[in-house]
Image 1 (spheres, rainbow, N blue to C red):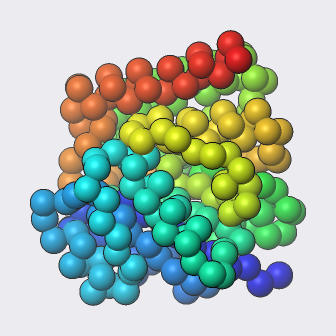
Image 2 (image 1 turned 30 degrees about the horizontal axis):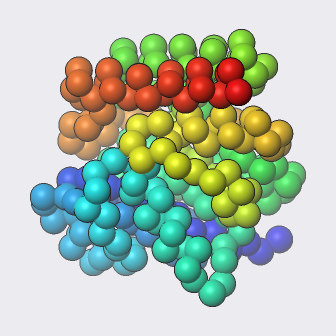
Length: 230
């Protein structure tokens, strides 16, 4: 089965990593979209030179960047079959995209999360706030929704039409958990694929600061409790 696959990469000050990410994305992808989230470095130039379509989103926030990329795609005449989200910090292994999309192509699964299993993670690649936040959020989803998620991993793939139907709203750190919660509510089929994970290039904008970690945690929990009592 031939599928039209597009990748959206939110990026803020990733000039040292973005070219590596783009270079290692499998050639079967029809378009790589890097959303420059108001970077103060040369992220946009490096990404464009590496062959990506570069969009500018001046409003900071992971969700804002993802929404910008998605809006760009919805305005195209030919729509993709699958959207893949991938971070620009080179902590994921872009070549594993083929593993992420396989359940969609081979088994007609709606939504796939790349789970950062402990056995496949480089030591120190995830901070304690990340590990604890994933544990808490996925356990709450299991408690309230009987979900089987083990991670909120940013490396993920979803059928384009299913993604549009979710009507995504979150503009900051709640984007990933919002997608998972809405997919559960709509009873999408989903699965997780174990992926490798390494130390990112540069400092994390979320887990690298106490403020970022707290804000991300609050956003994630607010989405979970909002949907728990709907």
